[in-house]
Image 1: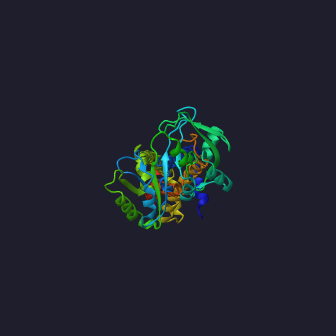
Image 2 (image 1 turned 90 degrees about the horizontal axis):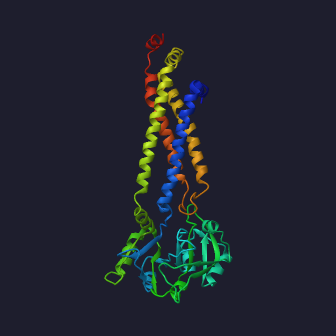
Image 3 (image 1 turned 90 degrees about the vertical axis):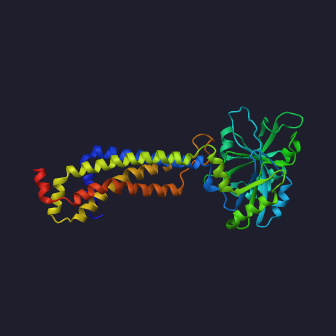
Length: 384
């Protein structure tokens, strides 16, 4: 920091050029933050998937159901500590455009399996006791203005109710996210209510969620479970929850690769802009650099000063951009429910800081080498 004032004055030599270069870097890192948050959202919270949870689906297709009777055999299998099942409902609230996930579950085992869904104890008890009760995420409740005790009718699209008519649910609880990025846009209700009241599909479930005793043994447990139901009418495919979510997300395309390609193009463009700014700055200060060498500054000193100047410029623009991106994503999902996991993870912030440093070094390296190799006589003659 001994030469900070000298470097700062060099940056202010061309204020407008420095300002616009810093703004370009700022915009690039705001975009970086937004793209990283979108990547988290479109990968459906893959990083949040439980390391000790497996997902079992029908081997032929995810939309094919599994028998309810499988649960006993799954629970008794070696390496399994708990198991529960979920079933997709697919109802319509008021208008088909009001899409949100509705899933039939076993209330108590479900909340034990997913501790990231946080619910007050009194609301848990009310839900457990109410056959037609449901819990909804905080964002979903805010989206429709729902509150505890409201009656919510859903028109069926898959599971018709015996006797016809809409399915009605009472909101017994509103859950919050115990872990950053947890989906708070879903609705969960009693599987027993669905199973006892639907016209067809009795004793069928959508998929099983299995907790393993040892996460390191997850793959072996998955193979063991699939072997239990081999050659049965409903064969299974079991994988870690992370692998399941990854496969589900890939059905809409490799969003992560697309976003990374856009990001690389943006950062490369900004690198060219910053490098050009530094190169112009060094050319304009050839005479000054020669004077510094005359005063005793070594080649290493000049190399360090130019790199410091380049990194400082990158840090000003990139740091502000990254901070602004963090502030923007603090508001959570900007779409009102379509991107429930929209946030900037800590890992992306660390990567952003590393990219800022790399940008500063890459943009300033060539001008810094030119400055360090400058010959005093040639520089003064050229300036003269």
